[in-house]
Image (cartoon, rainbow over all chains, first blue to last red; front, side):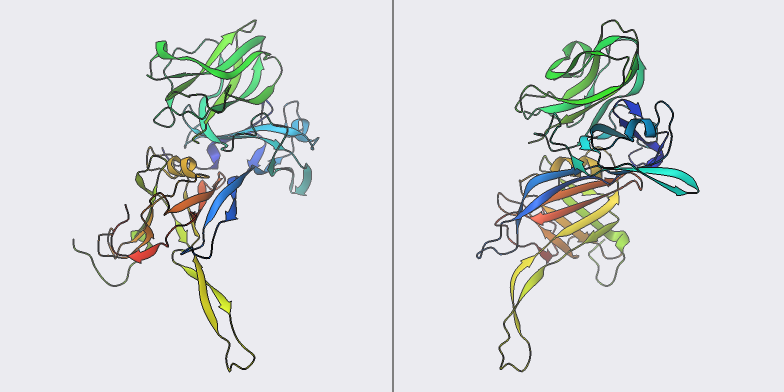
Length: 254
Length: 155
């Protein structure tokens, strides 16, 4: 199904799945400053896109103070948060669905009462503290929906663009739970067969402790790294035997 | 069916824009605004003039669209717009107004065929996941010719 509604949107922040608290989020915006380039001799007014502004908008939710609830996760604003919005297409988010990710400054956390008790958390601006400030496009593809994973990936990957590119990109991960250490990474291939996939340079978490919720954005080694046509998730287990995580990839197109 | 004349409805209006690969795509929309040129009006009235007077200066064209968030391969709104937003390669854009049927050559259209210097740039793309919709904005590239009304499809 190529169209969808908000029932299938999932919100992950810092390794916590807040979809059970969230009621509304957005708009998910990529807006460029427009530098006016019009000269006297031009036939019509014209612009060039300058800096990009990436905004997540505001997260509205019900107040929930359970261990993994929004009050526990977001009640101390003024911090950078790695946020992933997985957009399921009329179904639970699946591999290949769109994903919007960024490292945003949470500028507030406010409560209001209107029958129920609700909270809002604005994420209007990207953070300069982020790892991927050299990449502007927050729209990517979901390689691994939130899933408990107990085996490495031998499946085929996602054709997110239809061709290889040479401008790098970045992976975004949310680790929700696990029972030890593991390495999560992105692999790419020119042909969509298991044997063809190899690690994408730079796009790895390294060994992390998956027992604690975590999230992040990790760019390819270079801004000019070639990303082959097909991409997929991969995991290397350390001491862990089960890790619940979600993974996205953002291919830079220029 | 031959090109028709007369009145029509939005049911027969379609929006085409080039994707990042340079292919013109018909993407789903539910509103299109800013179709046409609007000129700056430079006020040149003198004290002794009986009435106020202006001269038109540069025209402007800012087209905004909204529609359903759609991931259809090749022609989905998200498929096309997420690849062109922020780009500096001029894009063909064509708003076709079919007259009580699918647009045919000879019926009104507004747009421009891109070249190295002529065409539109996509400067904004927003997704409202709460409504399942998107919005996008298009401005003209530096040095571009003006888009115009015509009756022949842009390419």
